[in-house]
Every structure is written in C-alpha cells, then in structure tokens.
Amino acid sequence: MLDRRLETVGLEAAVIGSLMYHACSDNGFANQLIDRWRLVPDDFENPVARYAYETMQQLHSEGIAPAFMALKQRMVLDHEKWSQLVNLLSKGHLVYYASMGDDIRSQAGYARLIRAIEHLKSMGCAGENIQEALKFLREEIDEIQHRETPVDAELSMTDDTLRIVEDLQNGVVPETITTGSRDLTRTLSGYRRGQLIIMAGRPSMGKSMVAQSLGLQIAKQGHGVLMFALEMSCDEHIYRALSDLSYTSNNRLEYRDIQAGDISDNGRDMIARAANDLNSMPFTICDRPGLKLDAIQSRVRAQKKSMEKAGKSLDVVIVDHIGLVRDTGRYRDNRNNQIGEITSGLLRIAKEMDVAVVGVCQLNRQTENRENKRPQLSDLRDSGNIEQDANAVVFVYREAYYLERMPFRDDNEKYDRDQMLARSRNKIEMIVAKNRQGPTTTIEMFCDPGCNVIRDLEANNGTQHF
Image (tube, rainbow, N blue to C red; front, side, top):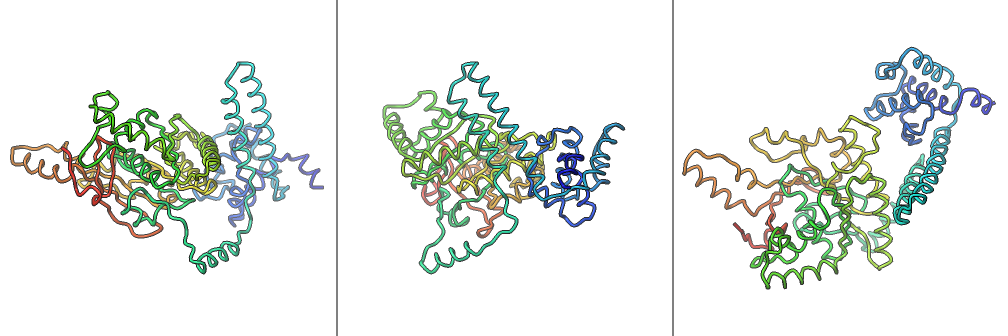
C-alpha cells in the first residue's frame, strides 16, 4: 500500500507535503526532520519542490515552522506554479515514512557520483593533470560521505562519562594546545580540539599578524599547524615568517626589507637560521584562494594523514580569513546566513577532524562611528552566527593605528598625541569577549608590525621600536 501511494504521489512530493503537514501541528517535528534529513534544494529535481524546500529551509534557519501560510508569504509563483505546489502539498502529506528524506539524499548522491564520473572523463580527454583529477574526486566523495553520515536520533553520554571519570581517577587531564602566548593560553585554557576560536578586528589591526605569529609559536612547541592563507600568497607569508623567526629584542629585519633584498651579511645569517627553524617546524601554508568548506576539510584530512605518517599530529588549523571562504550558494544574497553557514562549517571541521580551528574575521565599519573604537560582541551581529558557533571570540585592537591618524590643532596637542603614541606603538590588545572556558578580559601583548611579531609583554621587557 505504501509503495502504491508513493508511486502515485512521488517521493519529492511526499517529503514537501509531510513537512508542511507536520509544521501545521506546530510540534517542531518538521524542523526536526529538516535537521535529520540534511537535504539541500539541489537534491530535488522538481523545480517547484526545490523552491518550496529552499523556502522551508530559510524559514527553519529563522526558527519559523514551514507551514503553508508561511510558505505562501515567502514564495513568489505564478498561477500555474501555485497549482503545482498546492497539488504537492495536498497529496504529499498522505505518505510519510521516516527515511524518505534519506532516500532523496541518497538518490542525489548517486546523481552527483554520475556527474563526477562524466567530469573525470572530460578532464581525461582534456589532458588535465592527474593530481587535479584525484583532488576533484576526493572532494566529491568527501561531500557525499559527509552527507551520508547518519545522525543519531538519541545520544548517550554514558561512555564519555565513564572515560572522563576514569581519566580523572588516573590523573589524566585533557590535552591543552598552546595558543602561542602564555597569557592567552592561561585565559582560554589553551586551544582544545573540536573548538572554533574566532579572532576578529577591523582592517590594519593586525589580525593576520597575530594569527601567523602565534601559529609559528604553536608550531615551535611541536604542535602541527595548517594555515589557510586566502588573502596573501605563500611567499608573502614566508617573508613575514622569516622576519618573525629571526627577531630578537636587539636585532630585527623587517619583512619588506627581506622581500626587497635590502639586508646586510649579518641579516642573511639571521635569515638562514630562521629558514632552518621554519623548515623544521610542523607549520604548513595553503594559499589557494576561493576554497569552499568541503575543499578545506579535504585538505585538512590530507594534511592530518600526511603528518600522522611522519609521526606527528595536526593540532591547529588557521583560516585567514573566513570572509574569503566560498559558501555553497544556498543563501545567495543573504550575507549573514552565508557567514553563519561558514562558521558552522568550520566548527564541524574542528569536531570531525579533531583539531582546533582559528577563524580570522574582519569586522564591519560600525566600530569607526564610536569614540571608543575597541570592538565588542555586538559588532558581530551582522556576521551571521559567529558568536553562537565560536567557543571563544578574541578581538584584536591596536590603539597606535588610530593615534597615528589623530588630528591635532597645535604643538601641544601634537606633543600629547606623540606621547600616547610612544606608549602604545608596540602594544596590541587581545580582547577576550567570549570564553566558554574561563573569564573575559583584555590581554596586552607586544607587537612589532614591521616584523610581523607578536609576543607576551614580559618576554620582550616592553621593548619599543620607532
């Protein structure tokens, strides 16, 4: 009987109709089904069903039950398409079984595999590099496997609880990965696997400097670091890394001078030592622009396996910056939801790949309209679900940037400005605005932007460079 009904109504109509039917009862079951099935609009062949599901998904993301009246207010259809939709909804609710959304997703997976095979054939005919073909195939398989991973209807914490109690009895504490700063590590209780840490700030505040310099300090401690440099090239990061690693309180080489080759014989010796250090550290840069989340996950998986073969572990992944990660296109013109999709995807990567993910984020301009330009959590409101997804949010702020641009009317004001600038030129504030592992606070650190250097203040004895 069930098969006969499905044959008459169609699987896609059954999914759309049953979602609408359950949504009308206002028991939240429709939203649970959307979460469980993990469908995307492209899984539907029928264009009306595709549009209806896309609208349902948008309503779901806003916490609204995808009932008929909500759909009617959102969807723009001509009379013929409305008739088709009403037909889907009226007949579709007659059929329901728990796995029908899974069936659509599996069919879409098969269709994607077939398209991938056809694309591989065309790549072969065009003489494409075999490595590019393998990379494409891995990304396609990774995406299909991820969507086919079952979601447990009921979660049990018994095994995890027993493991934690046993560890406590044996004196085993959770692994703490250094943040690259003693003070920041103490505040955040270090980086933890499966966590997303957001490092945010306005342009020119030093976000990339902080991410890379602390990443190098993490790698110095033997922790594997993979940095996705989506804005600058690998060469630019290497110049900065050589400047950072050759830095001492008495000797400094600015990365622009290294890049221009404007260095002394002593400087060349310093760079040679820094290069040896860099080559021996488990620090890797991927500078391919425009990566999607599935491509990032694929590269994290490959790097993790490569390091494990070498007897090392991948511990921290840095994404600089998340605004340059390509979204799936699901939300089109809704940038808030696009960023939210990316941050939730990075959190998923952290959990599935068992690494800590540090996402660099650029804030909007609203901080510039305040007298006190230090960022705060409300500045993330236009950036999707960043605050919700992040285990910690750390804002990067350099007062010197604004002091350098402060106008003055006379010599007295210039003198006062210069005095403040002298005190702040080599200081950077790490404002811990959200912290699930501890307190929120502000940490002052030493910075030398010309050398791409971040250090704990005490480690540099407050040394300043002008």
